[in-house]
Image (cartoon, rainbow, N blue to C red):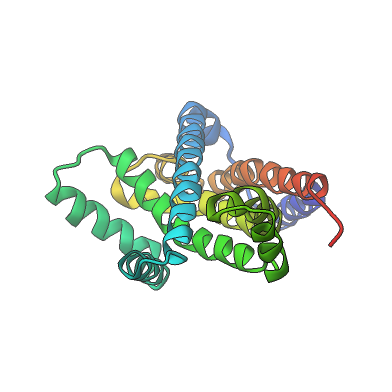
Length: 235
């Protein structure tokens, strides 16, 4: 279907006598590949940060200690209530500058991962709270303490239920990595902007850009569907 759509768009531009010029794209192919690899590396690192931090925020939001619960819940609401672009600008040009952190990639990974961690925390919380009270009572009846109940009863089931939402959030993370160019990280979008400025052929640059992101997001969605099928169970 994707190939058919691409062929249709290509034919449409041929019909209006659009003169394709792929020489500029080919000339900067090495830079394009470098930007794609940078996007992949930054996104994978941010995924690890987002999943780990999101799990911690979920535990904090469910903590019995009021300061921990309020801090975690407040962090989630503040992060979810402001745009990623604003957080990148404030995080890099104000906070990181004050702390004298010069590593753009490190700051970008932390900010991108932290942004999506707040959303993942809510996904994880919803999955955990969907576990029936009867199962928690059964775990207590067999002598499980709180940590054992989470380890053997709650988390295995919550992982299955959180998988679709988590996958969608990680796909969004991949696409949001394009905003990292505002703090000077030369990822894929930034490389394409430079390539377009040099070749004066923006359409020929943006089409490979779209394909490059699909190469990253489609396998992730396919993997999630396989995992959902593998972990499927009767309710």
